[in-house]
Image 1 (spheres, rainbow, N blue to C red):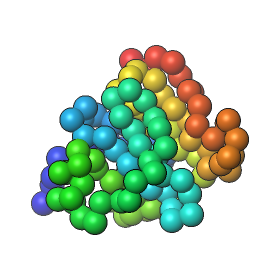
Image 2: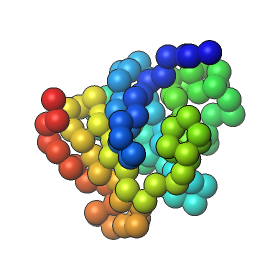
Image 3: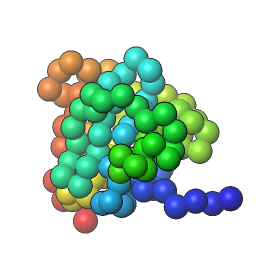
Image 4: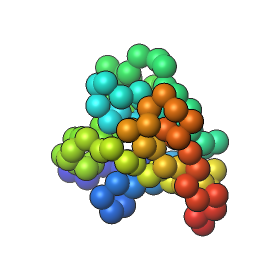
Length: 110
């Protein structure tokens, strides 16, 4: 049962956004801030999480649980996200609340 996802995973800590019709909501753990990956980059996700996959699709979202077995299988301290704006972002969960929490890692990875 393989279903099409709006992202690819690469290596041990990289998520590649690949579908501009759906935004990704990155959930690393219950205590960490959630991040929304749009075609224009990254932004905080302050809304309530969709209750199920269908609810997410109606809101044009796909929720990515980093620690789920089909993604990375564990919580991450460092995450790289390649967004559709051509940039790779570095998300450092040890720096929550500072300007170093989310920053551009590579300006053009294409």
